[in-house]
Amino acid sequence: MKLDTNTINKIAKLARIRLSEEEAKDLLKDMNSILDWVEQLNEVNTDSVKPLANISSSILPQRKDEAKDINSSDEILKNSPDKLEGYFAVPKVVE
Amino acid sequence: MSFKSISHLKSLLDQNKISIKEIAETYIKRIKEKKELNIFIYFNEDKIHEQVKEIEKLPNDKTLKGIPIAVKDLFCTAKMPTTAASKILENFKPTYESFVTQKLVDQGSMFVGKTNLDEFAMGSATNTSYFGNTINPLSKNDNPLAPGGSSGGSAAAVAADLCLGATGTDTGGSIRQPASFCGVVGIKPTYGLCSRWGIAAFASSLDQAGVFSKNVTDASILLEEIAGHDQRDSTSSNVQIPSFSKNLDPSLEGKVIGIPKEYNIDGTSDEINGVWEDAIKSLEKKGAKIKHISLPHTKYALPTYYIIAPAEASSNLARYDGVKYGFRASDAKSLDDMYELTRSEGFGKEVKRRILIGTYVLSAGYYDAYYIKAQKVRKLIANDFVEVFSDCDLILTPTAPSAAFPLNEKQDDPIKMYLNDVFTVPASLAGIPGISIPYGNDKQGLPLGIQFLSKHYHEQEIFNAAFALEKDYE
Image (tube, rainbow over all chains, first blue to last red; front, side, top):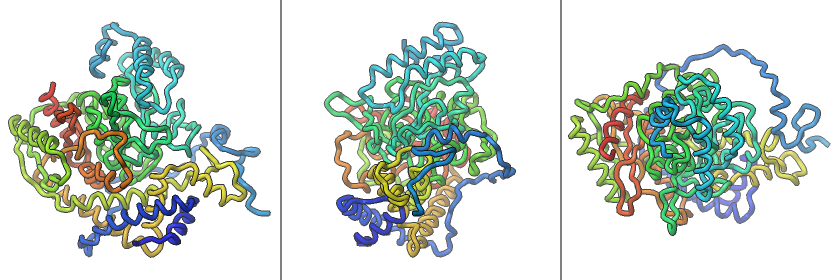
């Protein structure tokens, strides 16, 4: 057992996902079995291996970092669940 | 009227034997008749008729003029909503078109709708979708089968004749495995060949767009249209895209095809091993040289994938916070409350599981033990392929360890579900291209798939070999 209920709840807090007790119990079981299963990677000697982050074998071209004004804020705001005077609106943060 | 392939429909159009409008009407009728298979998340007749008017205005030399295409609902489309099969993106209307779908629009494609998938492409059966299961069109009435996943809707749409081509994305097998389950052709090109711009991100170092079609020629026509460099995706490669379809050449004389011993695994059905044998014999007859090879780190591919993919997903899916688009939980009192409730109600079980695993393996104290370790093993898996391809042109393997399984098969063990991708994940980790083509059937008459892999950017090699092997069942 790698994880306990406390750890699950801590991770869930980090990920901003609220779990019910029932969900936490279910996930604890699944995640422990998945983590036990991935442990088999420890059999592999990787002492002199560099971690691979980008698999591409071609040289990736760079581009100029230029701002483009596509002036679509109205359209983008249409997708927002709550908006106010051209801004995204969220519950009050400061009293 | 039946249309066998893209080339067939194009020739009917060229001879004025059918109009764009008639094509639209034919496919609208078919899609309505197959509604119970739940293949589409979004289907709207009016949107198709609107496209007809636009397409009619295009010059006749547009490669895909009037060709009905289904789009996986992970690609942002400016004229149709995009959900990623998640409640959290319900009612999301993208303000832009993805690179891949824009290319298809530019060539005159007719989008018939947006297809179902596993939520955020996380799954192997199209059964984690917020919009319900898709049913494999090859199912018999009393036994509904899964279409595979995550691009199960797209594979099913091609198999059910609801389009002549479909887009998919493949992160660990999400094009090749459903292609195999539905008896169609599915290709995942080299990582970076098609831009990821406008595709809802799952695991960015693995995600790659590709296509489904009824035969290899059509796949080659579609892939050459959607490939190409895009400045808006920093991993998009700037390579010359060959005319795959014009270059198709079934001659295998002198080609060396590797058969990896590690792909002989317990739990693969005898029938699948049987068609693998048949394909090997056929390739030999066609002049290819068979070489028995070893990819020693194969067994570590799945556990490596199930660290790297959730880690990247946990980061990519942080953007779904209920602020800018999509679903927001209604009764939150504070900002933190809103984030937590929105994500808790908006994501399904499998997505939450992967976000939490990803968060854990990236968290302080565990990052080196899990994430960095997995990236190192990934390097070894990629090296296995580099070594083998120094004296092989292609590798041949089965696509999946089983034929399509029943929808109601118990799936309470996530690891068992993950094993569906055992033959497809290694190529994803190595970023190499792979195709699945139907090759034979099991005793129940269900299609089985065979997979060709090759070096980075050697899609032509893959198309040629698949084109040659496809002829065995014509």
